[in-house]
Length: 404
Ligand code: PMP
Image 1 (cartoon, rainbow, N blue to C red):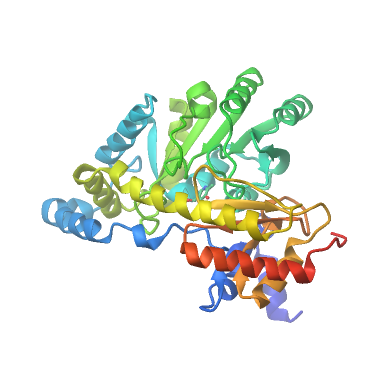
Image 2: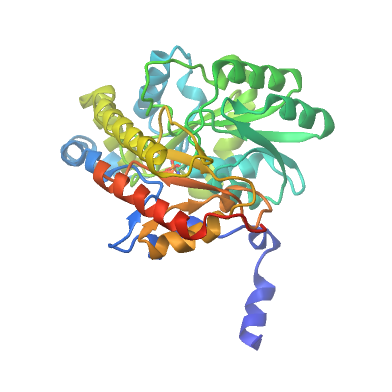
């Protein structure tokens, strides 16, 4: 190692050395090549970004509140925007006061602030397996130990959860009950109730991350964990999958004043407040347009894309492969038989000009695994069918058991 490299290495904090790079971002240069059909991304479809409406709202904000939009603002966030969020929860039967809502720079920042406020080195953080990579990254900054509870098709495995709560002191649990990233799994109502009851019984703090709840393909209604255990749940939301990601606008609902105030302090230290110009634009958008009508277009498109994907998988993939049939969100999760390698399949798939995300970055401490994530929101039905066919071709080459 050169002297210069050694000098830099000695400066790097222990904290950052624990944090994995985002595998998904690392493979973007390969998966984004124009000849590749990519199921690797995790993005909403740009076709449904409300560009014209946002253009109009931006003009309105500058005309009506231009100076305030360009000035510093409060850490908690724009009161009108927090009222919109509170109203939106009311439509779902949740009463949430605006003074419990903190606007954040995407829900990704919410995860970081939660890490800052709650996690001491070696604290136990409980995760679903598989879990959202961005949460693993954000929490890893605070050097916790991770405790893992597997997901079943019904949601978290409650027997394992109960066991873990008995045997370990868990500081907080991070869960995504609606159309989880990466698995697309949505918790059944019984599972939601049981997880919430276990949290109350064991005095467990839960972080309920809900970026995909508004993209539900069916009319079935499910309650949030917050509904069942409001005193034990920090609820996260975002405008990334409904209005637009570029604004980086999300929020935290805190279960009590003490937690709210601590999160506000953490946010002050991090960035004073989230971009107030964007907050005003989103708030104007929500006043002028009906978000539910906007969401209907997105839901219809993603529902169709997800159906095309699952039907193509059924038609082309080997019989012993299992896959989730998403009732919402943007992802389908595929499981090959035990001992099969999604990494090997990935390398062959790239040769066949199709991409996905191998499951491994969504697990703690694994080198390879037999699962992978497919995103359906960004490909047309024709591309989806063709991409699944290409994947099947890749499987013909390397669909066999290897030691992983
Ligand atoms: N949580 C989950 C489960 C996600 O999938 C994402 C987006 N990939 C985020 C949080 C971060 O979203 P935001 O754009 O609001 O930061």
